[in-house]
Image 1 (tube, rainbow, N blue to C red):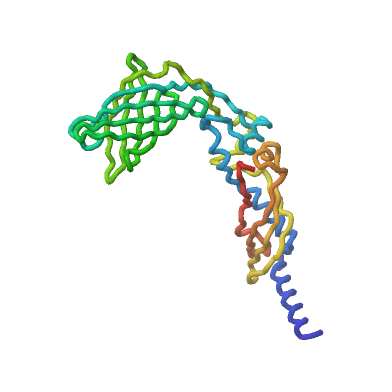
Image 2: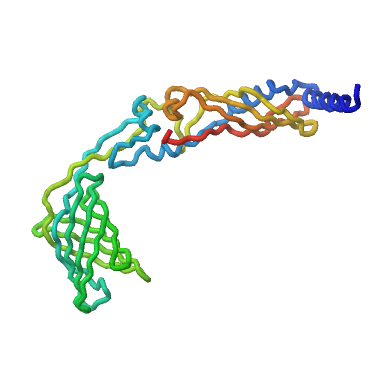
Length: 304
């Protein structure tokens, strides 16, 4: 027998003796079984925050992403339509913009609001013209934003070369009143109240919002803190079982988890699979135990 061959055989035998010792041999199959038993005692959780963050909030349109639609079709998520009513703010308004341009007198503001009732939520455009009495100057601008279902409007635009934000609330009366505030971003933030009177379209824009909730079909304890629990994970193989000294070893393991109907709906497939690493320690009685093992993980996207 050649010298190199004898050396290789000696190393192999030494490794085998160290892995075997007086207890059960740490073979790849034995290592796989040890990790199987180890993971039974662990909670294997796969983060699905991309999904759980969409359960609960209201949306102006139906959520169309595959991860939600699948669960609706299989009865694990309920889609609810909620009737909402927005005031039509369309109209002409007049009022004052106190000290809006560093003048000593309140500025006179004329505003025209138009509403796109087809957008969800309704989209508003506020066009305004401001006359500054202190400087006898005029300035025009526009502000674009959305309506809320509690009679408010929030929009951003420009005041000359500076951004402006306007937030107003409609009080239907005779005349109608828009009250709120403006904010001008410049070298410093300038804020002030707004009070406009005029005539709005005395009608409402009827739309729907949509919300999504879990149903009673979801298995108890399956979803916790933005993650889904895998009921059972099986090790398929242990590869590259390596000795690290006489009482330690490590290997790479391939795993899979068969999915029930709920988890199939979440992930859009029949099973999850991947690889983890594990380390083993030899006890004084000669038996091996798992000292550390990666918990299985898998990527998730509600778009798939």
